[in-house]
Length: 479
Ligand SMILES: Nc1ncnc2c1ncn2[C@@H]1O[C@H](COP(=O)(O)OP(=O)(O)O)[C@@H](O)[C@H]1O
Ligand SMILES: Nc1ccn([C@@H]2O[C@H](COP(=O)(O)O)[C@@H](O)[C@H]2O)c(=O)n1
Ligand SMILES: [Mg+2]
Image (cartoon, rainbow, N blue to C red; front, top):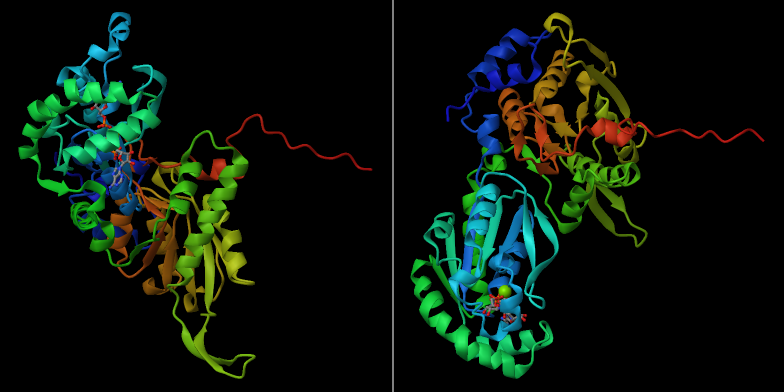
């Protein structure tokens, strides 16, 4: 697919052209940017890294996957189990369940598995069946799974069908001794599946062991990596995680742009993102968790300000050598969603001056109407530019250009976002290589309407409550 130039992307996204400031030279600079990864469609279809994990029943496939997920905590990872695609049993099969071979390739609905995997690979959300081992049916509501950077597909027979193997970028076989597998299976099936030990042993000798020899073991040859001892093999899992990181790193914007800083992800941060991205989250919770994330981004951004060494005397009479905060700074919020970041900045920097910029993305006759109110001495300050979402980079370029026109050195600008689309990062970092961008997550890309995906919707509306038509302000009567 031919990639569009950044300029095409930006012009198409706004429907209008830049105006004001040094836009002619800026346009030329943007035109010069030919980043092959900046096409919206390309980024949207950036395919995830698919890892297949096969091995005998109870070999530790799920345990290995959980360990990989744990170590890849800062990536979007999803686990798909082949078990979810067991065919439901008919009434007749149910009456003779002990004669049913759950270890044969025909026990699985491989067509459905393929369909789900194809969709996930192409960036679509899917509903995965929820199989119940006790009733032998899909009893529960399906599990909604969103597109991810890494897909782990685990199951006894996932290497059996060549079409499923084709989907995988890496194949792992968990190689655990048969007696260990049997011992684990007895414990698991009696405690978790409510089966009696006699039935477990009968099933093992009748179906599980023969199927392992006939169908599972022969697929070991397709594996790129064989892990002896499963989850006990920490060295193997570390190496696998390193490899996945290297592969994902090919798209790592931080490696391309050293001035882009994505704050270190933790499960707390992922949890907050999950809440603010959920369309069902109430306004109250949205504001609460957005505020928490904003505070983290602001604190991180402040860490990039210059400092001077300072020594103080502690109450024990000892000297502590520390640093003094940078004093010449100010905030600039891009109205309106940027205003949501002002409180966090004020909470961190007592009495800080905060200017404002208003950018109309669709103006008359292609003209952008811009309002600005900035500290008069802004050129002598470090500027924390506030906008929670970096999408196409259009508004950011406008805002930064204004700051430069006011005499702020490019290297004195720190642009703070909650989420940033790769397209916007390319545009801003290439136009202004000396500014710093601090963000909490990099997005998949932009959709055809140039909205950030997965995104979180209209941030300003959700934060300030203007997306809720039914919202009424109740004014307490005067006493
Ligand atoms: N390294 C290990 N040491 C002890 N128990 C383990 C280990 N790996 C897995 N198990 C246990 O064995 C059972 C099967 O493991 P699981 O990872 O679910 O295997 P699989 O997905 O291959 O069926 C589970 O009860 C799990 O807790
Ligand atoms: N209703 C079912 C379905 C499957 N099994 C057994 O599960 C094993 C596969 O799951 P793992 O987590 O061990 O990979 C397989 O050996 C089936 O025999 C079952 O017992 N009942
Ligand atoms: Mg399992």
